[in-house]
Amino acid sequence: MGNEKVASLLEDKINVIKSGEKSIYLVGPIKLPVNLNGETTIFQWYCWLRCENMAGHFCNDGSYNTESIIETLASSNLAEMQQSSVLVYGDFKASNDALIRMHSICHTGDIFGSKRCDCGFQLKQAMKMIADHGSGALFYLANHEGRGIGLFSKAMAYVLQEQGLDTVEANLELGFVDDARNYDDAIQVLKTLRSNPVTLITNNPRKLEALQKSGANVAGRVQLWGDKSEFNEKYLETKVVRSGHLKGGCPDE
Ligand SMILES: Nc1nc2c(ncn2[C@@H]2O[C@H](COP(=O)(O)OP(=O)(O)OP(=O)(O)O)[C@@H](O)[C@H]2O)c(=O)[nH]1
Image 1: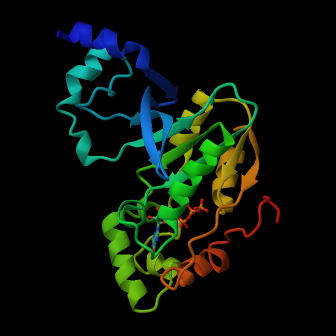
Image 2: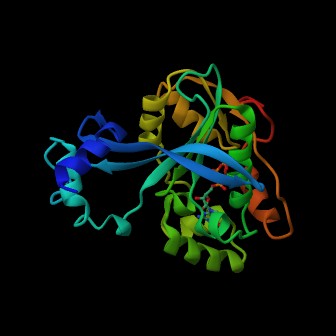
């Protein structure tokens, strides 16, 4: 198969979202059958790549064609970088209301099922809530590890926490801010996929604020608490007491 043929197969599945200096290359939808609590649920999956003055990569000159993307893929070493993605359920573009979650990657909680946090529970529960609701999207934000400090630094923060520091103190002692996450790219992708109202699944007021400030059509928020155990009790308490996470279903509760 030549480059031209491959390009023509991919053309309809690539969407270029331009915003100032940067471009976001969005690939999808791709059918993704997912095992959700023992049942197969069909999601549509999209993955994106942000490109910003990356000399040597396919995004450096602002021009774009599918063939040039394919030509540079193999030499771009994308496995060394983080790419985020979104799982979409139902008629996400047209439905009147939809549930969305901006889920920050948690290697330990999402993959290993660590009980030090509630991330793995929230991931599965949010996917279930979205499917039960009939329309929605779960954004899996791969550059958010450790609230934006990266996996290695999160491991260092865990070591400090084992000496009694809470999650916020550990981040600060390592020279980070408490929360360094940015939602801009995910919001751009959301706006590309849907303009109708969305309800955000979160306990974190900063996520809600980021979405509202962006001008996205936000109908409200639903909370997601659960999976409390002796292992994450302090972690959950710190989220409420130090990071201002909300207990209750509405933004102003
Ligand atoms: N720095 C740090 N990050 C952690 C720790 N435990 C989990 N995380 C990260 O925290 C992020 C999730 O943030 P949370 O504060 O649990 O929840 P949230 O995403 O802000 O809010 P919700 O939308 O309500 O889930 C993930 O990226 C995890 O990797 C920790 O002990 N220290």
